Image 1 (cartoon, helix red, strand yellow):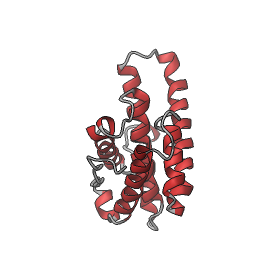
Image 2 (image 1 turned 60 degrees about the vertical axis):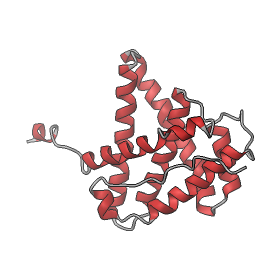
Image 3 (image 1 turned 45 degrees about the vertical axis):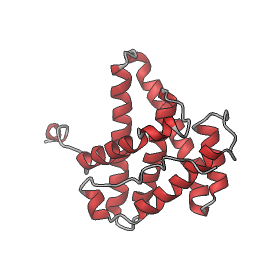
Length: 185
C-alpha cells in the first residue's frame, strides 16, 4: 500500500504550478527591465519572481481557510521544482544542484522576510530600501524612482491579491497588476 503513495500528487500541486506560472509571467513584464532598470540577468529575474511569489504566498497564508496555507506550500514547491529544472537545463552539474537550490531558497526566504514588515506596515520607503538592496544590489539608491515605483507596485499587488477570493486561487487563477509604463519621478 505504501508504494502507491509514491505516485500520488500533492494537494493542489497543479494549482500551485498554475499560480507560480502566473507569478513568473508577471515578473517577466518587459517594463521591469526597460523602464525600471532591473538587471535582465538570472539574479534580476530571480528577484522579480521572488517578489511576486512572496506576495502570492503572503496572500495565501493570510487566508483563514487552512487550504490557503496548503496552496502556499504548493506554490513554493512549484517555484523550487522549477528552479531545480532550470539549473539542470542550464547544464549545472547534479552534484552542485542541491547546494544551489538551497542557496536560492535561503535568498528567497531572506527577501520575503525583508519585505514582510514594510508590507505589513504599508511603509513604501522601507520596502523601497529592501528592494533597492535586493533587486538592484545597492547600485540604485533606495530613494531613486525605480525602487519607489516597484515598492508602490508591490503594495498595489498585495492589495490586489488580498481582494482575490480563495476559490479562484484554488482553481489556479490569479491576476497580478501590471507595472506602469512610466516611473513617476
